[in-house]
Image (cartoon, rainbow, N blue to C red; front, side, top):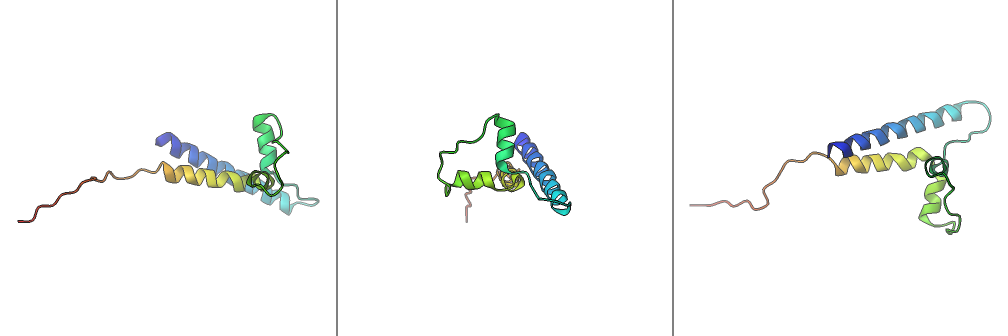
Length: 97
């Protein structure tokens, strides 16, 4: 659980860095060429994602979105799934007399 939360916070921090980089690029002069998920995929996997998917598929749309928009929800889901919860008794019996 602890490693999942640590990794989730790391992904959220990475998404924040990516988003701030996009903001700096947008405020600068010239053409705005932000970091896409496709670029991060190429850096991590070493090859481009397969191009045989139809343009309306979810994978194609995910690769075309900004990288921070794909990484931030993954971090949030990890934080939510690995949260610490109180133990609840499954069978709670009460006796009335």
